[in-house]
Structure formats: structure tokens, C-alpha cells
Length: 133
Image (cartoon, rainbow, N blue to C red; front, side, top):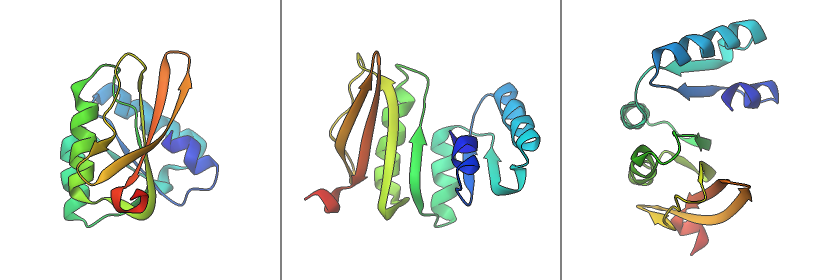
């Protein structure tokens, strides 16, 4: 998703992937598309990445979470993102999951505002909770 965003005009993408083989493929794809200078790749788990971005005082317009389906890491990440305040004022978090693994409406300081279903796949959208009342 990060490479796609860059190809469509995003200024920078921060890509987080724990699997070392997948990290290598991501780096190769960035190089082959000429987008390596617009991306930072973090070979850590999502919770560690959130801590790193929090320490950097990062703010993101879009955060996409594509955790392995049915993984408890997705909900842990949503909770930590809501606590860390990494979402820009009008930013959005998109969490991809199976419809059989419903997510909560609220995690810490973020609140769900939309769901889109594509067969078995659901994209759940979250925003800062103060924006939705």
C-alpha cells in the first residue's frame, strides 16, 4: 500500500514489516520503482514501530494496518495508535481485517466512522475521537 501511495503522489511513506524476507522484497520493489528515496522501511513489529514514531513526535495523515488476518496484533496496534496520538488532526487509520473478526468502534482516542466490505475483507476507518463527537 505504501508503494502504491508513493506512486500516486504521497510525499513519503513509512513501511513497517516484521518478516525479514518481506522487508527485502519491499526494499527491492522500492528500488525498482525508483521510490526508495521517498520511503523509510522499518523491520520491526508494529508495536515497536509505534513507539519509535511516538518518540519522533510523528503525525500521519493516513495509517494503513494490514496485519495478518485474525491476528491479535491488529487490535493491539489500534489501541496503541489511539494512545500515542500519531494521527494528524484530520488523519485516518484504515484497518484491513476479515468480516469474521469484527473490530471495536473505539480504541483509546480513535473512533470508527466507516466500514467497507469486499467479500470476506473489511476496511474499517478510524479518526480522532474528538472529530466525531
